[in-house]
Image (cartoon, rainbow, N blue to C red; front, side):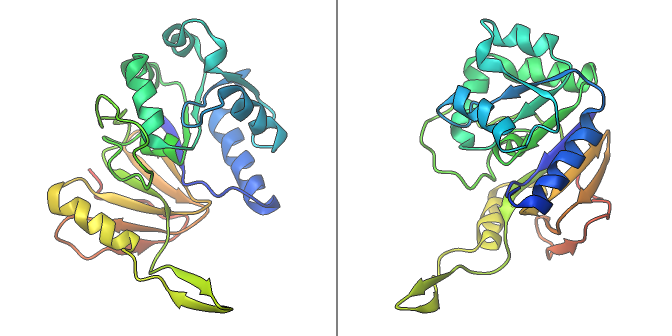
Length: 237
């Protein structure tokens, strides 16, 4: 099973170059990539934007919304990419269209490569419950693809938020990401990886390698610890 899971924040030349390098390394010589844009409202604009922003690594980006039968499109795809946006909207459509089992079958059983960014990474986890997004719609289930045995909190950052007020930066005092993940572990056992912006997790079967940016690993009842790019993520099952 092969997956490439990104946090997001791939803006600027250096980060965009990393994105395209990892995408090319991951998908190899496939002729096209089936892109699932359901996390945003305008599917066609989103699909077109991937190429316009240079986030296609030279591949043909084939929007699933252009296919009459989305399940058939998944079953015929040589590779799958799921974009970011609102995870509630994304998982609702994946369940509504019957794509959860289809994608899992293709990635796990047929070994086609899967790439997710932000919301697309959230839905690669056992559930979507560590998303940062507002619940703008109610999905039939929080259950997701379960391609990896851990949760990811995309766009993770350490510490509190500071905002500009009257020309000075003042602390916001809202809950931190660490607070939110601790709350998750008050009711759930699954480990969580807090993945910084422009970070990737390379997944090859049961091996998980961190690329591009640091991450923080959270386990219930344990102190979180930080992991640097190039390291293996262990003890996450």
